[in-house]
Length: 107
Image (cartoon, rainbow, N blue to C red; front, side):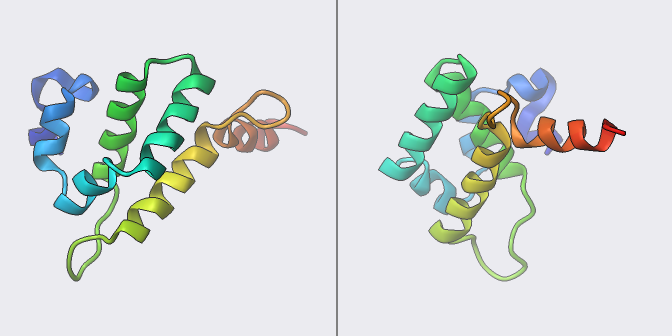
């Protein structure tokens, strides 16, 4: 991971992220499914598509991998789905993570 992000930390370039990504993720990142979800997340978070794509791909490439073989498109779709649940606001305007933290802090 340190080699992937280098000295620049989480601000690593998209090219740097993709250089270390499994080929199946590079391929999935070009799919219409991936592009639509990342665009929706970017819109909801008020970020540019390029920045959101970079953040999502960095997270996806950092997730634990299968012990046997390269992840499939379905694996990447599941991971992206989980990220979208975390980042999408709920009815109170908070993402899933913020909602979980809020519930844990409530009496």
